[in-house]
Image (cartoon, rainbow, N blue to C red; front, side, top):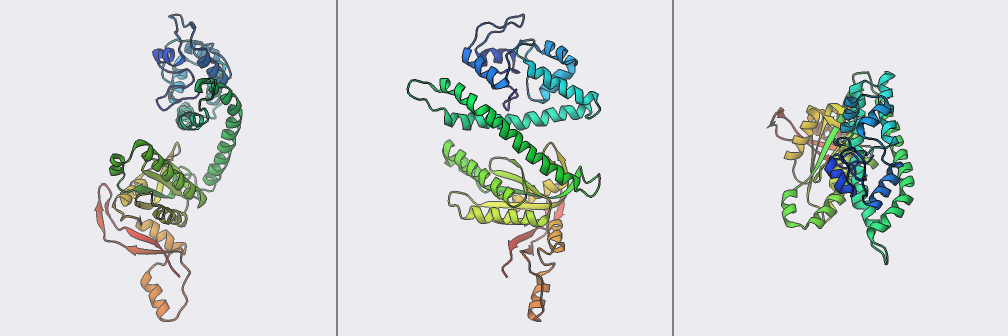
Length: 380
């Protein structure tokens, strides 16, 4: 069942409000849950995508899966599907999904709250993916042709793309799961597997609010897409992880300070050479981070956000903890004065990638007094 951000399925609004289901699929559900004639193409598309026809009401699906209606409703809502009363809108796939989740709980592999969390994280992630594919990908491939409307082109196109996109989705998911599992099992202890020490960074476009008033909607959309694409590519290429995008801001994380510092500087260097982009500010902090459902939380994340807000244009600010990590790993000198003294005395010193300049200490709301460091790339 695919769902949009409002928590309702695009294919006939299978789990939408009962009235929304009638409107989206062009159907009318009678009081007994039976279906009257509706939009044939909408029904064919739904059947194609879901791999089965509507057969069950929510109560019947829960009973067929052997779970209580209360638990079934919790799973469905966690996945982002709204209540539909007792409309006959569910398929064998819905029954099987319920049975699998409930089976994991019964086998003791997942607690009930964890199973609900699995449903929620999967629903939220795939909802965004499904929205993007329909609104952008498919829309661009279904231009009306002579003798065929966009609607008539949609069915054969979906029929061709569906198995390929499904296989690709599973491939990417397995790759990401393998990478995430590898990071977790390398944690130093059980506590670090949940509350981990990471470098967390924000990159924020300067003056974005003014741009929204000046640019046309299409231009603004293109700018945001270009920014997100560039940021995502740079973060991935240099060993970081893109946590989320917020239009004019991206949040990324890295396992070590050096990787995060490289990403921050690369973002600045790349976007300053793009005349279509406004200036950028980057803030990075290092410390304990709590991870939940693919997101990161905690004081370290809040500090990175505050550093971003006070960073100069086209510059990277880092906190003291990240500066210390860079010095410890040999990526930056502990003191520029020591480097200068060594050079003056003709002594050798390490080869450093980064330079750090202490800035004025300042109070940061909710975090007390912090001492930011200006991060730059070291020459020589």
